[in-house]
Image (cartoon, rainbow, N blue to C red):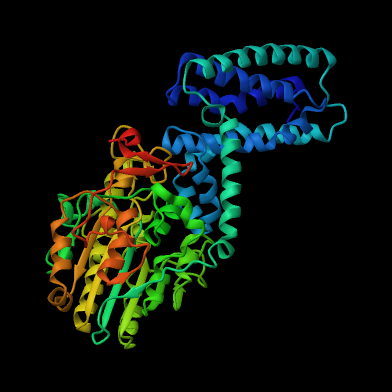
Amino acid sequence: MRLIPPHILLIITVISLSLPNIVLSVTEPMSWMARLCNIILPVSAYLLLMTLLRNTGKMVWAMFIFIFLAAFQLVLLYLFGESIIAVDMFLNLLTTNTGEVSELLSSLIPAVAMVAVIYLPILYFATRGAFDKSYRLADRFIVRFRQWGTAGLALGLISLAGCYSSEEYRASDDLYPVNVGYNIGLAVERTCRTARYADTSAGFIYDARTTHPDSCREVYILVIGETARADNFGLFGYSRDTTPLLSSTEGLITYPKAFTQSNTTHKSVPMLLSAASAEDYNRIYREKGIITAFKEAGFHTTFISNQRPNHSFIDFFGKEADSWEFLKEELPESANVPDGDMTGLVKKILDGGHMREFIVLHTYGSHFKYRERYPHDIAEFLPDEASEATPDNRCSLINAYDNSILYTDRFLHTLITELKESRTESGLIYASDHGENIFDDERGLFLHASPRPSIYELHVPMMIWLSDEYRERYPDIHSELLSHSEKQVITSLSVFHTTLHIAGINTRHRIDSLSLASAHYHPAPYNYLSDRNIPVPVSKIIRK
C-alpha cells in the first residue's frame, strides 16, 4: 500500500483526534461559545503539536496517548451516548477481571470495529513513516500549519475566556481532553490512597459491643446482590412473577423505595460494607468495614464472594473476616460458578456451632451475560438465547435477566430456609449494589456505570427477613422495620447501621436515624456519589 504524504497524515490525525470534541459538542449541554471553544481550542493545539517533529510518523506515535483516549471516548459514547471518560471508568479498568472484560467487549463489537477502522490505518501509516528518513514535512507545510494553529489557539483562548466569564464552565469539567486528563490524575490519586489503606486504617477501632444476651445463639447473613434492579422483582410490582418463593416467605419485609448511591460496583459494595456514604465517602480510606465491628462484638465472621478479588475495598473489607473465600480465585477466567454454590458453604458454617455468627455473601447475581447466571433448566421466560447487546435482542435479554432474578429468588429462599432450620435468632439482609439498563427507552442505554445514571441503575431491591425466634425476643425491632417499609431508603446509608442495630451491636459509629430498625429513623435525601466523589441530589441527574 502506497504511503500517504506526511501532511495528509497530519491532517487526518488531527481530524480523528477531534472526533470526540465534535460528538461531545452535540451530546453535552453547553452554550454556543462553549461548543466553539471545545472544538477550536483542541484542534488548534493538536495541529501545533503535530508540527513539533518533521517526521509525521514519529509524531503520531508521540501522540499515541491522545489516540488511545480518543478511541476510548468514542467507545464510551457508543455505549452511553454521552459524557466524558469518568474517573470511575479508569478505576473500573483496574478492578475488572479479564472474564468481565471479555463479556463486555462482546457487546461492544460495533464500537471497537469503528475505532479500529478510524485509528489503525493512521497507526499503520505512522509506523511505516517513522522508519522512513525521507518521510518529513516540507517547510511550507510546517509554516502553514503553525500559522493556522496559532490563529486557532488565539481564537480558542478568547472563547475560553468568554466561557469562564459568562457561565459555569471549567476546563477540568467541560473541555476534552483536559477534563479526561484531570480525571486520570484523580484516578491515580485514588489508586494511591487505596494502596495505602492498610496503613491509614491500621489504628481504627469501632469499640463495638453486643447488647444481646450470651445465652442464645444468633446468626446474621448480609447478602449483597449484583446488578439486580427493583423494577424486575415480582415483590416490587413487576408484571412477571420473578420472585414466587420470596413472595410467599413469612417474615420477609421489603423496601420498594430503596436507592443506591452509586451505579458502580467498586463504590457501591464498599458503601454497603462500611459507614462510608456519598455524604462522607472519604472516611473509607481511614475506617474498617462492618465485619470488623461484628468481630469486636464477639461474632465469628465469614466472607464469601462469587466474584474474583480485584484489590479494591471489597477485598479489604472481606478479608477482615475470620475466614474468607473467593470462589473463582483459583478457577479459569471462563469458569461460571452459580451463586447457589454458596448455600452449601453457609450450611457448613451454620453446622459449626458458633454462638454468634455473621456471614457476608457477595453474589454475581444478574451480571451480564445474564444467561450464564442461572441453570438453564430453571428458565421460565423464553427465548433467552440471544445475548448480543443490541436493542433488537431486548426481548431475549429481558427474558434472560428475569430468569437470573428467578434464580436469585431461589437462592435467597434457600438461605432463609437454612436459617429457619437452624432454630436460631437470625436475620437476613439483602440489597443489590446497583441496577442495570437494558435498552429501556429511546436513549438506548445498556449495562450500568453510565456517567449520568438512570433510575434503572439506582432503584435497587432491598429486603430483610427475621426468624420466628428473633421476632419473639425483639418484637420492637420487627415492628420498626415494618413501620419503615414504605419510606424511602438509601441502601448505601442504611444497610450498615440497620445490620448493626438488628444484631444488637452498639458503637459510636452507629447512627440510629439511619437505621430502619430504629424508632428514630429519618429518611435521608436521595443523593448520588458523583464521579468526583461529591454528593449530588438525584433529582439533578436522574434520567427517568
